[in-house]
Length: 305
Image 1: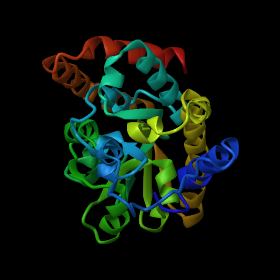
Image 2: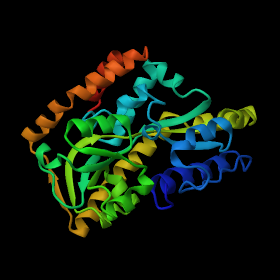
Image 3: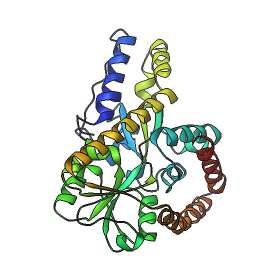
């Protein structure tokens, strides 16, 4: 993430400062933004091997590595980052398979981002017909399947390459959270937004196990008390606040923001049912409880609205 990114300024830096203060300077955390140490898709493995002590994991950047966790990114499930995060934590408690997917590291906290919308550079999308054939950036297998069913041509790119791809016309648009508009300056290159709460991305902050084990029991306790679900909810709340920043800068730039009609929204939701059934089938083939997890996610999503 760049230095102006809200997770950097409002979560990572404050966390590092609070840890240093709570341990009376025994633990000092240096934050390296912008992929300085390792590229974004490599953060998890870098934390496993000890290249870094902490890694910021975007689950969708490593297709197939976190199959069950990808339930969080299924389309049209959540209305906000906090909404998705609350469900994420509850699923984590109920299904040990989530922790098994994150073996080899200490998981510090998990969370969801704010809702992803469709942003385009050349034309407004008001229907599936408008979307057909358009090259749209994606970052995960679930979102790739969603775009294909809706008639678009998915192009997989990390978010660090998104601005240039939009600017140069390599792609026609992207589905990404509102917050990314502000954090990555995308308001300078997108002209249209189609609002439908397509998905939320999922993340994890992970720590090298040996780095944790080298700490004194006292400092381990301090860290454990400072991490966990409360940090996940803080990170989610920060994303939801940043969503409004994205909306504001787009409006200021004069972009057109359009919300799908109720009937069109239902068309899109009906169309992506196959994404759900394919996801369950893929999970069951891996001997994972896909059907139970999806049913629980849908139930919790309704309860936590």
